[in-house]
Image (cartoon, rainbow, N blue to C red; front, side, top):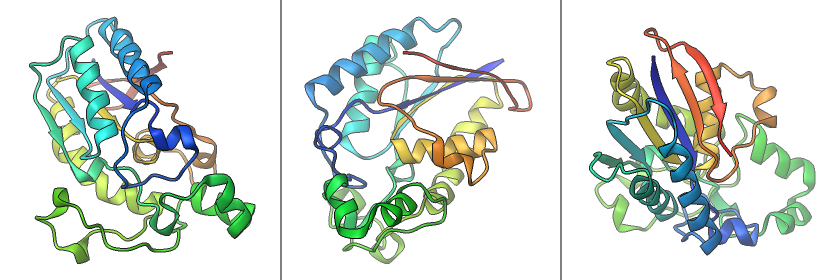
Length: 224
């Protein structure tokens, strides 16, 4: 049996302010740092979990959470890969807007569809101007994404860099974001488009998947 542990980053300043974040780079709050340390303690106590690789996004809130977990869990020597493919979903023009205010502007039903509908894309924003994406053709980077599009850009990384190690019996740790993890969980658990609307991924609560040799889920557990 092999284990995959998924963790959403700790509370960010945008989470605290109830603001859409997406690809905006925001720090953890003090609470978020404490949550990351707690997640590290929980992961440290998982029986027979010895990750050979840590995977995270290129956004600070996930990277710092991963580093704290690695420190507390004694995984600092484990290689870590940072990839834009594990970034949060790109929220386009909604980035930086308070979620309650967005409901007043666009209406509750429209906002719910943008946030939870699998194929719904929010209004496009401006191209990302950030040095971490400097090596990419800006025309290839999203201006807004549906959950489906988020899933499509992260699955190649999952199959090539995560599943390939799991199939060899190597435990893996992914520290990412609410929507990117929802997109991955949808695939792992074969959740339909209707039921994915109800799935929430809380901050810093490790999700443990145990797989058999064919990477079929034999057990799932959430640590709090």
